Image (cartoon, rainbow, N blue to C red; front, side, top):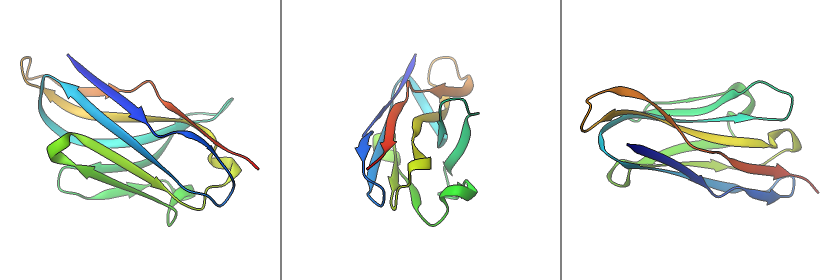
Length: 121
């Protein structure tokens, strides 16, 4: 079994910064990629940023130039550095890990429970 847990959310003023963390634990053979998505009330979930094993990254248009995703492969962790935050960035942020399990050898996505980010004066 695998668990994915996010942390680092909170309340921040417009123009401020936050750093989200995500850790995957459990029976993990390999993590192929990790990504952050977000969902605001009444809106569809959208991709924020993704990073694959080789280090290539991809960002949603609305966060390009402000957010940065990184990984620590040794710790099975991913981070999302969010700068110049805007009220429209307010959402629940989810981490997803694309993992092959050590026991099952099955490859699938594992989702965290999410962490709330609120940008407000």
